[in-house]
Image (cartoon, rainbow, N blue to C red; front, side):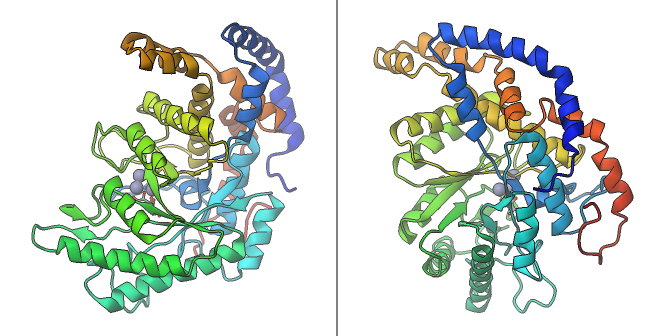
Length: 430
Ligand code: AOS
Ligand code: ZN
Ligand code: ZN
Ligand code: ZN
């Protein structure tokens, strides 16, 4: 396997911290043992945890006002994969990449697949894009795509999605995530029922062309780019569409796509109860679809979401929704943000394993509100960092990914090897 951070360097970096980690880990083991948890079984589950990196996340994001590119940004999908491989090498929590078409459209899918394979990276859900017009495209998406009033525009959007699925099959992906910006900016602009009917017809057509072992994930969002109404604005519309469409059509929850203060963990529970929770886009939000780093604003909410997921898994161990980070990095090095965020999601997952579920159930059944909330807090307030560090160490990653990454000078190397040249393809690093 190709590794862009020198393994000896990584080991040296870890060695300096190993004895401190061992004593922290042993102390935590004792503490957990007193509450009836075996740390090694928690560690084993922490090692299994995985969240996909979005290919576009390794470039600096931006707002509609400006974008301030960072140094040595990846210029094409191959360089994006290089960066993803570094994130995985150090964090050991991100073995897959979620592609976006057409931004990442390869000339030769085989070449792309092989390029990823050298890093042991696989491809997660494919993302289609009918929220932007591409050069040379016949129909415009200005007034919508899958829900457009014009059949020609809808057909074009359907064809694009089918093409994305075909490409995904060649790359080993198993899911298509559909997010559309369709909606309206003025009351009266769009007929609510007709646009939803059009959307339903369109996704059924895409669904019918899906391979048998694929899922289709519908992503709702309350607003933006449409500012008055959105066709798939909430989990209700998403659920209805998924239910109408078929068994393998599921809802995807992006944490930033709800009104402020909405109880997302409850949405998680509802969708799961009826077999329609298919995946997540993790990020954090203060005001809207801010796409801030996971766990940076409301880590308790993230924990409560994983508390639901772990509860669901306690009844169905095969349940395995798609997890992806969907963030926009404007002021940080995207590699640092993605490594840190992956660990934050992993942290919420690990803490959810440490909830005393039997006690919680008893408190719920006896209506002991104080002790029920305290049971959740008991797990949430634990410092489980040694488990995350040990998981990374044992998997060949970095005890402290950000520190190790900075010391490796990877970004500085990229800055040298990636002179801005939009026409250049291939990697400047390997
Ligand atoms: C848009 O707001 C959604 O979060 C999408 O999931 C995603 O960010 C977009 O598809 C990027 O391509
Ligand atoms: Zn998203
Ligand atoms: Zn979003
Ligand atoms: Zn978002």
